[in-house]
Amino acid sequence: MKKRIPYGIGDFELIRSKNMYYVDKTRMIKDLELHQYLFFIRPRRFGKSLLISTLENYYDILRKDRYDDLFKGLWIHDVFGSRIFDHLWSIFDQCDFIIKGTEA
Image: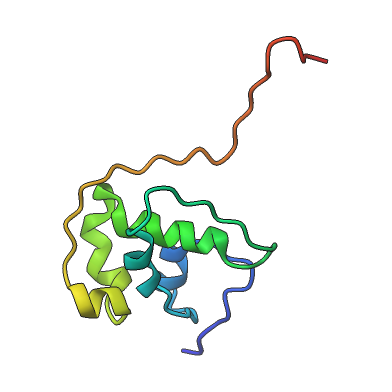
């Protein structure tokens, strides 16, 4: 089966499960753990969503049963093997709220 290029897809699990091309940036995870506060500012189409999705799949305790399927063959799996899952992951993708006094 021919691999596809995941243009515009920011879902790590989808990319890995459909065997699409993926540039392994999991080495960055250990570097990110050295910092207390992270702020991702990059131009559009620079892979921010895919990086966040990768972190979500790596840390989320509710996804630990898929870890080997998703990360096998990637740097983080080869170097660290199994992962101790100790985070619950919450996503606030879209926030609809109105600041009091600004209603139209």
